[in-house]
Image (cartoon, rainbow, N blue to C red; front, side):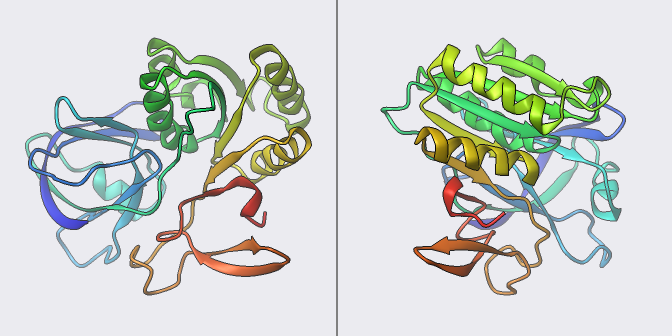
Length: 260
């Protein structure tokens, strides 16, 4: 991992709250895995001082590009919206631990909420490339926020959409949908990101069905290198609970290991 200046190919607004950035990573030697992230310098000035961690939305090895789908929420991401095609941005990474896809898992279920959809999109793309059957439940405030749905459908993912505005995103309703999918598609593994409520649901399902699973955690970060301990979470270690750094040991953890 290293810090590098990369050229911005595009940086466009794709909904009321989300932007989509594509950068040129020609010359980058490291392999980027789904679930890993980069720490982006939002502005050349001193404020905001800290970088912003963004998970990778798409990894395009053929064109040597990376894509980020980000929510404009604070000063840092708002500064990023001012960056234009042809300009440069400093990115540090790839960082963290990514998702694992086992050969024995022929059908996988992804459950993502909000910006967590972007994190799981890269996993879906890799799984499809590995000839896995991928089923995804995408949850968001509104249809307008289900930004990756068309992309996932286009690559062969079976997509189910649930939203707050339609009253279909309640945990009890999502649980019924998950149970139906488990039977209909003979799911072998579970993956989730973006909601602790839905993550707890997936933990319960995994335990009940004896299925392996992974979760990508979202946390505010300082250094993103494991030094500052700003992004610590609790995980189970046998009968004990210990701390782990999301930026180093994570952001992807075994689903059953994370204390939610």
